[in-house]
Image (cartoon, rainbow, N blue to C red):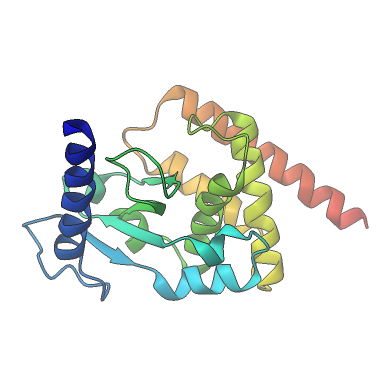
Length: 196
């Protein structure tokens, strides 16, 4: 009985915390206090308008910008999906975190490719959060499909990966290898399309 009350308390606390700490107007009105703010509502609505995944219309999707020292110096894009009856510490819905550095340095089509890629992870039933190379391939294909439907440049995905490789001081060798393989595959997909 105590455990149930504790879980409800944790979930309630997190909802209150996010309601007050994260402003919804895209501006970090608490600059220097929280280091986080919300953004990209228009971009997410655009992606949802052409996406075929059912959950997009049912789940709350938030894009959180990390403006902490880590977010100002690294290119970061992370996503997680918490089902309605998920863990107490997990706010239900789809959460994508972008670093402020990414938000400021990526062009619009590159930002859209990153957002679509991250949402692609949440649509992949086989993705358990570890983001294997196969998971990355799936999310890349999802992003290419979204960009194509929007009439945007599909090569924006490659450019965004190149930026991650070039301008990310904390990137690991494993992630660099994964990025190279993703670019190689995306170039192959482009070559196949050009033959048609």
